[in-house]
Structures are given as C-alpha cells and as structure tokens.
Image 1 (cartoon, rainbow, N blue to C red):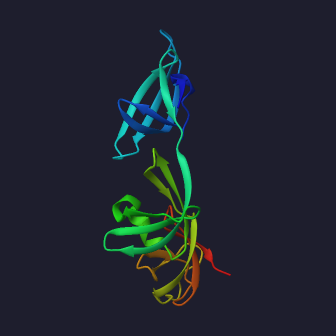
Image 2 (image 1 turned 120 degrees about the horizontal axis):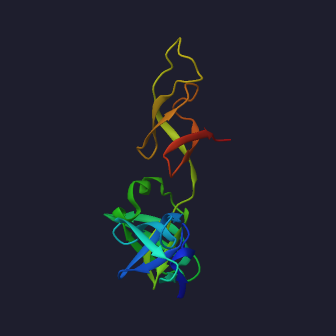
Image 3 (image 1 turned 135 degrees about the vertical axis):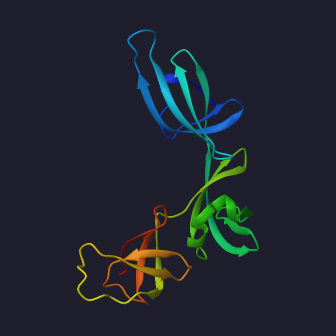
Amino acid sequence: MAKINGNEIRPGYVIEHDGGLWVAVRTNTVKPGKGGAYNQVELKNLINGTKLNERFRSAETVEQIRLDLKDFSFLYEQDDALVFMDTQSYEQLELNKDFVGDRAAFLQDGMMVTVQLYEERPIGISLPDQVTLTITEADPVVKGQTAASSYKPAVLENGIRVLVPPFIGAGERIIVDTNEITYVRRAD
C-alpha cells in the first residue's frame, strides 16, 4: 500500500478511509479565494455501496489500495450462488447472485469475467461489455411507424427485455451492452 496526498486522488483510485475501502467516483479540485485548495472527492464504498463526499487537503495523506485482478471462467449457477473457476489455479469461487446484481442474467457457460480481490476477498466483478443473445419474442412491426425513431420491445433468451429497431424479429441474434442493458447491433 502506498500513501498519497489528498490532492492526488483521481477517479478510479481505491483508498482506505475511515476504516473502509472506497473507490473515487468523481473528483474536483477547488481553489477558494480564501484558504488553501482542496480536492472534493465523491467516494463509493466497495463493500456496501454507500456514497460519501469528502474534502481532502494536500497536506492530508491516504492509503491507496492496490487490488488484485484475476480472470475467472463462469461454470454454473447453483441455488443463489454463481460458481466461477480460476483459470490459472483451477480453484472454484462461489459468489452470491446479489453480489453480481442484475447483470448475472448475462452470464453464459465458460464466459470469462474479471474479479477484483482485496486480501484474497472478492469485492467486485467485471463482465464483458457486450454479449450476443437470441431474441425469443419480438412485437410485430406497426405499419406507418418511421424506422428512425421507433423501437419495439423484445425478450431475450435470458428473460431480459430490451428495445430493438423494428427490423429485428424473433429468432435473430443481437449484441447487447451488459452495462446499459441496451441493443447495440445485429450479430454477424
């Protein structure tokens, strides 16, 4: 762990503050007319997700935490647990579905994910930005609607609903953004 000054905190940095692990979401350097400059930092707790706004002066120091990133392969779902395998040591890791959140629906057999670890304890997970899925249901096209501005609802094979352009029908494969849960384009 390295000590850094409060004015060196940047978005994405993970720091130890008030006995917890926090990631800097947004920073803003403020130089008031009177007094010294400070760094206004919006922090998000990595364990429970709470947010906090803190002021750090350049004289204050904080511990910058280095997270270990490991690649895991998704194996299967068991009750409320998701089972992953370390691609190097072949050890298995079980994570609660709530830990992954709504994006757990996008997990597919063998999908590679990156797990953020702190002292061998998982604190975050990154899925691929885009996945290819098949549409199981799509509303028919309504005549007279312009293709430029209208989207219609569709249901994917994993049960998630997305809006797609009118020319997309059931049975077609599309690419979906896993962060925004939106249609990107038709799959090749």
